[in-house]
Structure formats: C-alpha cells, structure tokens
Length: 95
Image (cartoon, rainbow, N blue to C red; front, top):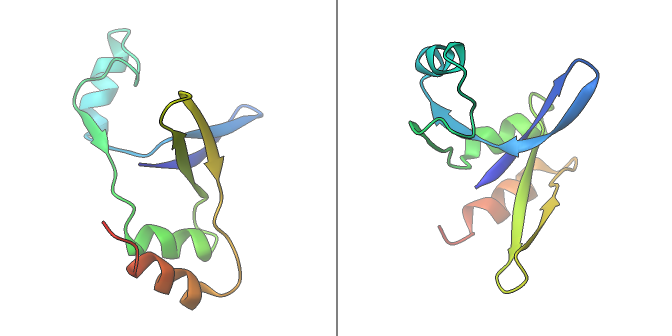
C-alpha cells in the first residue's frame, strides 16, 4: 500500500492509492456514498512506473509504515535526484 498526495480548495493531504472504476464511483457518490464506504476498490500496486512518475515530479507518493503492536502509522517520502539508485532499491525489494 502506498499513498498519493491530493489538493483541493486550499487543503491537501495523503490518501491510499486505489484502483477503481471512477464512473462507478461517481454514481455511488451521487447517491450519497463516499470513497470510504465504496466497496468496489482495491489498493493500487506500487509499480516502477508510479515510482518514475514520483521521481520525475508527475505525482507525489508516500509509503505507509505500520507499527504492528502499537496500531500507529507513519508516512515516509522517497525523493531524490538519483532515480537509478531508487529504482535499483525498488527492484531489489521482496514483493
């Protein structure tokens, strides 16, 4: 699971990246639903292309780190000018 940055009406934050049918979600939202209660979604995989988009400035992503026993969450950011090093680390991470 990873997060994407959003901005709207002067506010901003991070939310989990989901794969979903946006037309189906629009119908759900028109009936009063929210993304939180929309059942037909799944977490987007963190792919090499998403990482390249982040490193090239096309999108901002973050990684969620969970503390198993404390039920807390931190968000981490990966950025830098050496995309080859970052991709090497990404490709050598167990999936």
